[in-house]
Length: 331
View 1 (cartoon, rainbow, N blue to C red):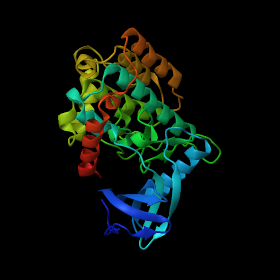
View 2 (cartoon, rainbow, N blue to C red):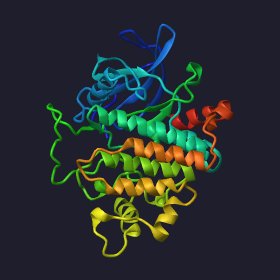
View 3 (cartoon, rainbow, N blue to C red):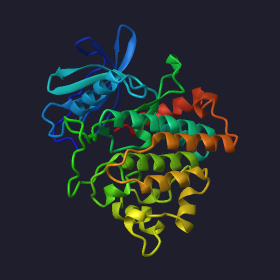
View 4 (cartoon, rainbow, N blue to C red):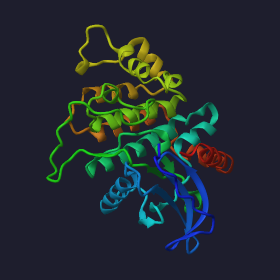
């Protein structure tokens, strides 16, 4: 939570070239505003200048690195600076997040074809982030958003919020050695097993979180969704419940009753992806193409229709409700 009072910007207030149009949300470290410049709209995020944890500094650094690599799933950092007693960053304005959209769809889930296609884009975003040397460490549906309808970007997925990112490569592009004990980072519902046992996370852990997200988007819920505030219970559910007695951790195989409960209603390829993730070790580079191929294979075998996306069918109702939900739940 913020240790200092947040700076409040008024509608019509001008920060350099940016005019405040609306307040979109407020969280522990700052606020998000809709701003304009010459009739174009953008998002402005703020943070108290005296905040101990500098979230926006990491955000700016990651976005600029991604822009250098021409990463397609990242917002563009338009500006950053200091105003009054706050730091700010101005970036691409995006549409509703995947979590809010999912909650507005029938059964609170995406159609199979849409879920698979969106999952590919979400994983591409993770691959792009890993390519510039960072782990996200908080992969979840509320940290992905679709593009804006007026820009014809309803089929484009953006990855968001890099405040918890950690650089896994040093200045010489060598792996940083794992810490003996790492603090919990992320969101309990989607956190990888490594995070629950305070082990240093690596690239495979972002993908494990992505898979939990993928399962939720496909079937509408995760079996431990009611335990979000009970970190240890969720950890046991993710691991011990699926762990055959006597099986070593590094040979973890989650199957039988627990796996059926987790994967019920999902393509069988998700099981292959889970087992592949569990086979990876700390320094291993994930084979992203292997996962893309499994998702594409699933789409073909199920004769699933990729387009239009679910929110394109009745965009006015779904997107309006998702925006309203996002604003009320903004953090």
